[in-house]
Image 1 (cartoon, one colour):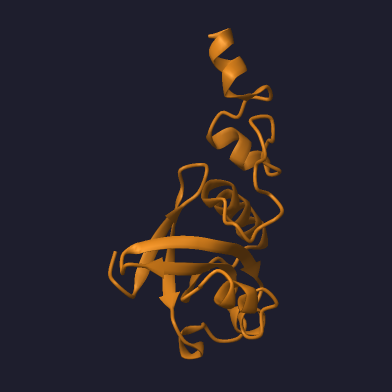
Image 2 (spheres, rainbow, N blue to C red):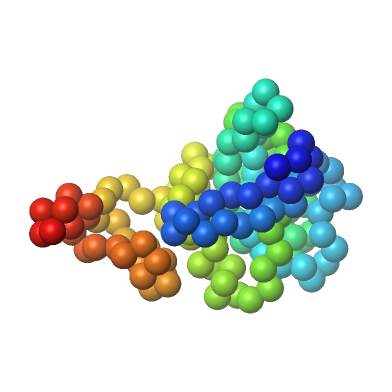
Length: 143
């Protein structure tokens, strides 16, 4: 990881997603580029805390004037936005859910697992980690 350049976030499935760090409007990709983004608070140079994960069909349209950026900046201390280009709609949805479930950002209300029985929405994520419908405790009891 460089100080400002690229950062890798890991989802609940263990998959790694490589994000470009953007500090200004000039760093946001041009119109028509889609993918997943993360609002981030940087503390003490290398300690990064994800605050919000979302997906966009166009980064420029979505991130400029985002309805949650003001709250992320003023109340949570967001310092930057990270963007990961993913063109396929289905892959974007799966990546967003995987990252929300893995990072558990405080500003995301949906898709954050509440307990051991809260399964992923997308079948790909259930298969990746061998999700068991009765939670980790029941899985170890059956073994």
